[in-house]
Length: 399
Ligand SMILES: Nc1ncnc2c1ncn2[C@@H]1O[C@H](COP(=O)(O)OP(=O)(O)OP(=O)(O)O)[C@@H](O)[C@H]1O
Ligand SMILES: [Mg+2]
Image (tube, rainbow, N blue to C red; front, top):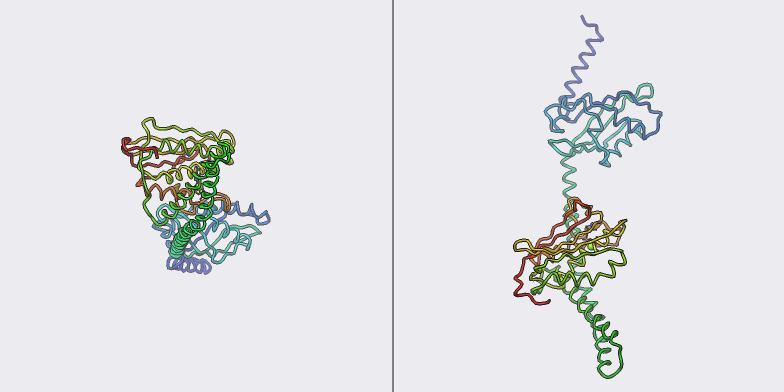
């Protein structure tokens, strides 16, 4: 015969089990073994709490949330396998729990399970403390995964709209910059021609100065063309194309950037396809691609110790012509790596980059019906590959 106390205990146990199974919320209990003395520094308590807490009770609601049949499938799991501090919400919730004497209300935890992925729970928890030591923790948790995911989707959509707005404003900005620059650029050209005219009228001007004047005129024309193309990029106007040899463009662009490479102590190689690299393209835009890619490599190599190197390569692959720029810097940090192609994505310190270079390259390449891809090299460093449609060398003219 059971005594009255045992009977009362069994009745409570029965009611408790019924409550566990009918609860809409997840119910859990962790045992802390060995118990954690609470008179230690906070960081030690947190470490020991994560290591020593093992799940000893979970209802089926919890099991199903985690993608299992039953709550009992979760038993024996240590806390540090259920929640990871790589998620800042988990760290903050545990810190808050410890700082509040192991009482928590509506604290968010993020857990990840193979069958269901991430789940977001709002927890109420209560620590059992005996002789100033934590021996266990009881709690309930409400699933707010659907709500969190909806919030994330809304955030992502907002971010896309923000970006589109900024891109629209960039389009407008390009238009007004083109408008504003027109006058000073025309002024520079007129003045340069005036100096040349003085030479023609018999005033002695050294040949070196005349050469510099010619360079200034060529640079201004290039700037003018870049501005016109920039406007076209945002309005999807197809570029004026002509037959080009990319090998020539590589040589010209490396010469153009030579002083920048020397300043940064970067050595550059050109590995050019011997058969030529003939495409139908817009010269200024192709040059712009190369300038952007080389500039990115220069930035990537900036803080690099040891030898700094970049290679520009052209090649053939079936009906495609390849243009590659690779460096021995740290490689792309974006994940997935293709993110770097999106407008306004930059890892450069505040304000030093707009995150537009690769996105402009992608637009130019698309306007040429080409492909652009990003890779991190096995040997370290980044590689950007552009594939253009090949053009027959017979129609080639020196662009
Ligand atoms: N060669 C490279 N090595 C490593 N990371 C790179 C390289 N090229 C680009 N990236 C990464 O891609 C990001 C985007 O490049 P992108 O050229 O679009 O913008 P940006 O260089 O940051 O700014 P800007 O608008 O001045 O070009 C860079 O901030 C950098 O994180
Ligand atoms: Mg850039």
